[in-house]
Image (cartoon, rainbow over all chains, first blue to last red; front, side, top):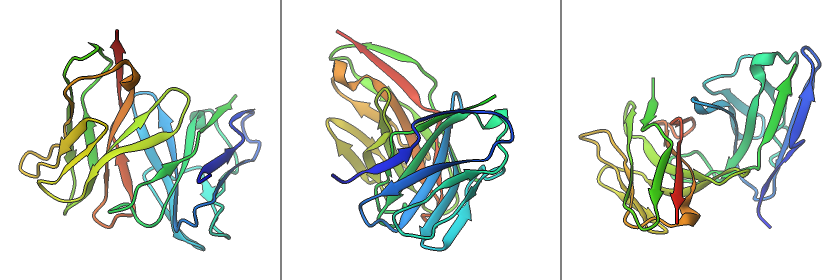
Length: 114
Length: 112
């Protein structure tokens, strides 16, 4: 089944404790992206990747890191999480950039930072 | 910069009512426009899209027309069903196709 998977689905952590949220897709997609969803703000793009070893900042990259060492994986790293990073996070992938191609979203990771 | 503005919710309609969710955008160049739907506890799914002015996207009875003169992409459906209850997001992709901008989402509840 074609899908985007994220792990973990739920995470509660404390300020400053490094964490990684994994994202994997099995559709051989070139483009991958991370978003955060907050009430009243909709989805905001954090980082995106056009291909392996090619990443770029979205609208809200501060406090996040990403890497794209393999085509199928695009982990999101929070080196020193803070409470303002409490949010619902979505990973997405598509065949290419968004002008033509549909994005496929993962089920989401709900992160709470205390 | 690029942005999307969509009507505030929540919206509550009776089954078979007509639905309109307004969406306007600000962008340089010629973005592509999308409507995504999010059912409870799930990720977003593409509902429809339009990639150039005057294009009409349609799917599952929903329609939206890319209006460059009014910078709008309003979502419509002639007769909603209970199963249409969800959150709807208007979105655009930048001129380069690399970055996405989403509206704040509109929650729709359809009652029998």
